[in-house]
Length: 153
Image (cartoon, rainbow, N blue to C red; front, top):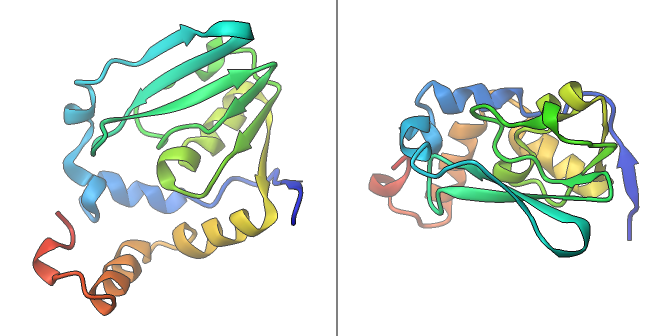
């Protein structure tokens, strides 16, 4: 088992710029994602839920704020209200881009340290940390039997 490790350098998702350049399935753009309204809801016992839009199904992702800890940050596209939140630390639950993509921006805006499990961080860096990740993912899907006509849709 590993513990959380403080990664003060930016989460390695600079390659997510590719999402805005049409090189992956996320490239349908934020126009479709804006159909989902960004919401901030107070749940019970001090738990707050932030819903952020996504350009793909399921069209949204939830982030939670509990006692100064923000859990996940969304994809990192569009305008998230990080400056309005009282965030002391950011915890990334897993390396999927819709959970970790906004970590660098959220950390910079709030001044909060970003925490992610060491093994998960290594996987995140391995998968999303290089600019050729869309091509590598497409190759992996082809190798594992996904029909080429469905890759990139």
